[in-house]
Image 1 (cartoon, rainbow, N blue to C red):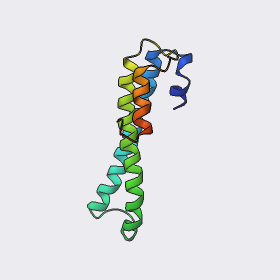
Image 2: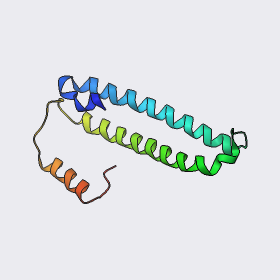
Image 3: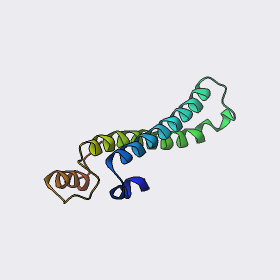
Length: 108
């Protein structure tokens, strides 16, 4: 996330590489989590008596990972359309995006 926040000191290709690397890490973590849930389904998970407590955690972490993957895909598409990583003015496209955010309408 820091590489995104300070992307203007680098170039577009470097930012896209950082997004891709982050996506690979998040996807790997998500798959590890899915494996833990699969072990529960298969009856081989440690501490099966904790399933109710674990399920609360699974939903939170699983949804966070899925959101992050969607955001990374959106960010990659967004950055690919840029000419460079220099800051840009608040134009009509960004105004529409901000309006959707403030209205609580989904972006991803």
